[in-house]
Image 1 (cartoon, rainbow, N blue to C red):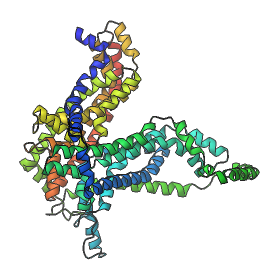
Image 2: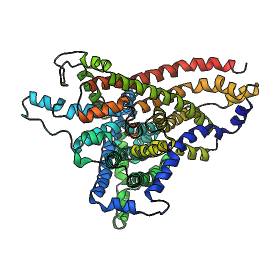
Image 3: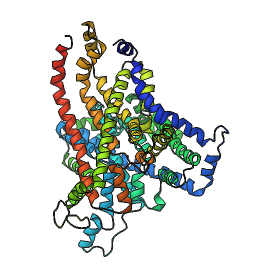
Image 4: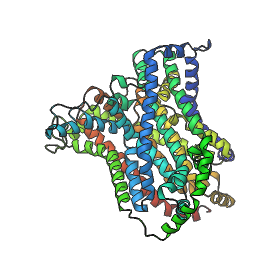
Length: 592
């Protein structure tokens, strides 16, 4: 008990388990990996020079940047109007649309990639439909090209762009736009001069997040792209599987990491800036920077001031314009985006009930054949049980460690808290292939390669970050005076935490645990590096079958995995609403 009381007086002590896992599995290995890339202790750039001297490597490097930038731009073009229309909807419609965005975000990346293989393949949905309609005589090359890569990557990253935008847009004071309208600004002018500058922090944060994640994409480009569409992560994975030259592989990994770091430093530095500062650079029109036309424009602006004042008085008492067409177009746009996000998963679910040897949409006959194939095949059920075991272990470990870390960080100074939180979130922001290689090196030193314990530690490195984020958000709304009241009534640290704090933050803890489980259950890249050949999880089994043969059993597995995010949301909803009366009942008892 005395030890617990001492730890409670030093909040940073609660973060020690999280940092111990982080340092052992990722922190120290990533430093050793960097030193290996420099040929320490000789310290030379020969590995980087060898990489850049090969034209094929440089082409893959620039191709990675190009694909990531284009995918990010498409996500901005589609995601911004979608987020804007979601924020302008009523509360119930907005909630429903956000749920529809979150469901594909939480759905397995492997399942969504497999869905596009089923849709775009030579015997896929689109080609079969066009052939049956007599529009084409042979399948179109819709897959294994750059366009298929963009379709798959944008589909996976679009929720990552929409959610930060919605979060920022909901915080914008709508009365500012109304004030601009009341002063004679047209709707479009009020949007560009007021609303859009205030939403730029969401655009920047979403763009940086999408771009960095796209840099580390491995599954989707490999499954949907051709040989000419390989990205740097694919190149690194090929090096690991063929000739594991640690120095060359480390150099390629840190080049990929360097691109992400440069992007974060260039665009991500002002992510914490206020909305007012974000609006200042945009308030000045672009042509006012031209010295020869700036004065002329200001003069013409003064000449037209009386006309604009008269026009404003005239427009003030006019009836509102017909907004049916803009509303119809906006509704149609949102419906198309939701269709794009949800339709691939629905196609896989429907195809999983097919009775044919090959997948077809719609199925000629309904059957549970492929579900029986899944549950009757020991290789599938064994892999699924292994994933469940690892996922539960990761959820338990990450929830305990992450909750303690979040609780300790919430009691530290703001600057120190921000720095330590950034360190814990580092494995999430780094490309997955880089984290996997570092974890491989760390587990190799610990002798845990090819063991369940090694996979659990590897998954927990990222899962702890998710738990810390979710629990910290819950603790941000927690009133610490409740703990002080319990302490003043002679409650110990453990009793205060279990009787007062934990009941109030329970929704965040359970949400973090479920998110950690899904993160582990969906992991492919890092698992493939540290599992060796002895352990096969369900995602690894699916990935091997997708690469070698399209077994219709995968459709049944994918349809079952689609249910996970739905169950996740239901569990969060039930926990959140039921925890409120429990927490309220716990408060009077806390002083006993």
